[in-house]
Length: 118
Image 1 (tube, rainbow, N blue to C red):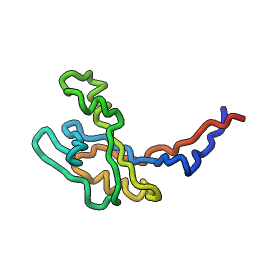
Image 2 (image 1 turned 180 degrees about the horizontal axis):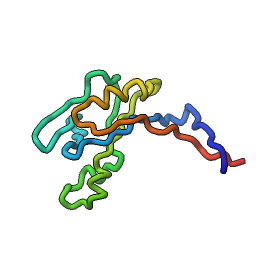
Image 3 (image 1 turned 120 degrees about the vertical axis):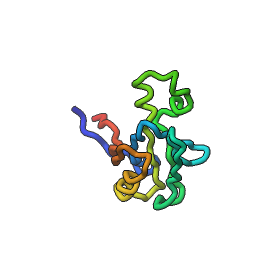
């Protein structure tokens, strides 16, 4: 097994906060708001640093009618990432994100590494 090599800081790759939404929630990126099937809305702007982005792990599934998705695709559609600005630690924000009404689970994503070619 080859040991891992850290990604150079100049690569611009950041460790996100991984989020699994509750089954009845979705994220509307155009409005930057979480919406439930019951009409509830939550805007996650309090407590996050400026220039934080929230993105779906599989954007194509987010745009697809839920009724046309398989059970596995519906589950995968529930995953988003909170990408913080450079220099911000995801561990500092994971508890805040876990407290959002739309979140079932949240955790710090894995450290990215490259294989050692030697």
